[in-house]
Image 1 (spheres, rainbow, N blue to C red):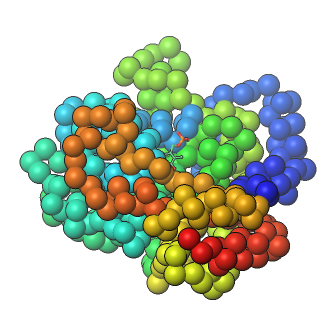
Image 2: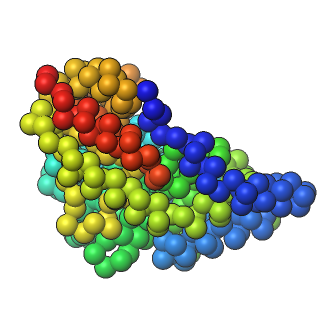
Image 3: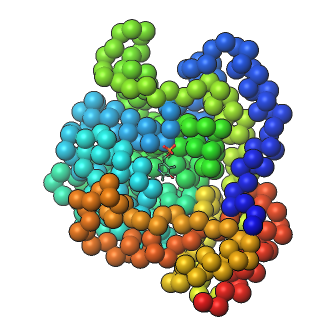
Length: 369
Ligand SMILES: *Cc1c(COP(=O)(O)O)cnc(C)c1O
């Protein structure tokens, strides 16, 4: 079986530049919050088309500190409700809970996998203060409709952009610039991945950026002076230096993923598999995952495995059915529940050998249920 994601191979493409970046940091003698972090923050803010990027320890912290920042600025209050999709990675909900806010889980649209604006509208109540749109699998959520709902009801519109680095809408605006603030993860398997944990907040909001800069560093903007009760969630110099190397490839890697998506969409033809949609604006999808659906998923996954093709499930259990959120177990979210039973991610990464792409297509097409 070939690898689902050849991370070592992806990083080997930049081995000499990454090694050079490592040596630069090694020899600098400065390892946390320094010149590399500042440079990466300005380069990443630039790539997203926003004024601020604030490097933090990981994607969960980016989301949590964004919400805590808004709480401290008085834009949110403890106990406020935040609407998010039930079919996300659990981090989206954990950030809300961790910040003392209440997650309101809603249905996705079965065709796009993204939060359903109609479900969002019906979930808005008197305590609702924010919506978190997750650009799931790398496809931009319907930010136009979510923005008009947010404006109509005076809500913050936030992005969990952990899977959507570099995705662009029809105006050329980039994930991270499509809401009031966004959280990114640079976990190694993400489209822009570090060689360890890393994350960032992006925003146009000067006050929020300043607040999160404090929060990530013990609530301090001057050494040993602590204005708020912060945390330790800083981006390492080393990860920032490595991310600067990898950022250069972000757009071309998205193109490579789009090419593979097209190969799959044109090559896979089997009524037992439902293919994802290529959005009308092709740049709005960066194909973090290529996700098919099948009512016979277990048999399909077995069949692929017998043919040497790896696959993964993102995600097998929706948030409302996780033990960690057992208080939500009674919610009726049939679309999200059905997707959790049917989704299957096929291998997809820049530079994936053509033979493996062919092998995946053939294995999908020979599945007979
Ligand atoms: C990966 C991911 C996160 C969390 O990022 P970490 O860096 O692992 O903390 C949050 N949301 C989504 C949608 C993700 O895919």
